Length: 424
Image: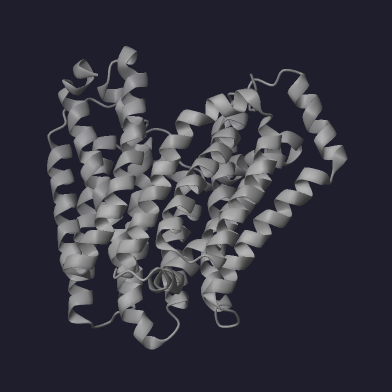
């Protein structure tokens, strides 16, 4: 570890990543607080929260699968510097708009542009690590980068909620600008020699054809389809729950608990404990999968998450919310880890990239669709009712899968007893 951090280029990239992620978290928490504080005066804040999630989510679906293709044809360092500089400028423009309280709807355009740029930063960072790190240190570098991502998310969301609650949205956005400036400065000192495939032309039709091949492969594999389908449903429920919680249910929980706390601070703590659960789940998932069938474990986890949400509906308590978020994080990382491991072990090398691209589209599109639909849905039913329905959906779906579709279970058991590599 010490030798890796003594690698000047990697240390600068790692430090830049930390400030970049912290800035992203501050930006999200500031935007959520802005929606709660500004649009709640106009009526149903859930509608505006859905609009926010739409502009954040659309680039993830549209550009996410293709961003890596473009990154391979541009210097990674150039892309990282462009991402940091552009996001800093865009956040400063957002600060000016919100401070002036004029042309407020243009904030959503800025949100969209920031999300677009972000889609290029992530693959650029991942593909840049092998360029600046020795081959024998590559595994450690990737592990440190991934672990840092999770840890920063835990603390930055919680800290971001506190910062926004204490100093307000506008000042938080200014801090956000400085985090990108620091990241830009740090990344600019990296020295590297990169080989770029400038001669390879990007054919949009070919990209879509490859993505289609990925969808067709997932559809043709019954065991893969089993897990991908459940991940899709889980992310839909997550979208409905998150927008309902952040728009008004968080305030109900604070009031019911009898504590004095701003909503954005409670949301930050909830996301922090969710991230903490993700870390704990990473350490437990291998041991759990060794003792239980991957498929049956997923069947069990669905109603479990549903019951946690159902209890939350009837027992609106801030401290229970933290416990629920923690255990939901553990369950979620187990489901997602099993899904990714299955895909890695069951897909051919020459198809893996396009299959994972198709998988990420399916995983993200459910969250975006649910987030967008939640706002209009609250015109008909309350946010608390959506929370209730989210829990009931997972419970009913999970119970049905535990006791019904014997043919499906029989097929999965055959796969398991053949010695599937993801079950040891």
